[in-house]
Image (cartoon, rainbow, N blue to C red):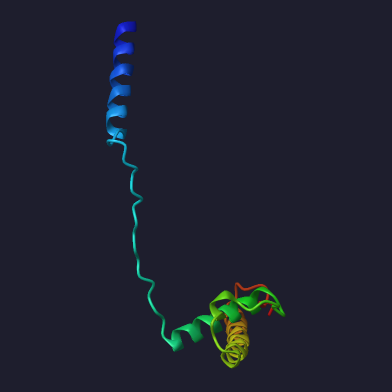
Length: 111
């Protein structure tokens, strides 16, 4: 039994040593190239508006510009912030109306 174990360990070690030995050359890193899709200006603006709406849902007065807004002009960022606030308000109104129409709803959503 002991001889079998030693023989298996020796065979395994030799197999691993044989696989890892490539004549002294260093292994080359694998490089995978993926192309990042380019968003249109309208898509970038909508992502920024959606990010502002989400930020306003999380806090009454968000202090940091969301990451999707990076790279937009200052005017576009301000417009997106205003549209995001309006989007959050419309979503809150809709949630309130849905609650009023649902007899199982026990409390109105807090803006």
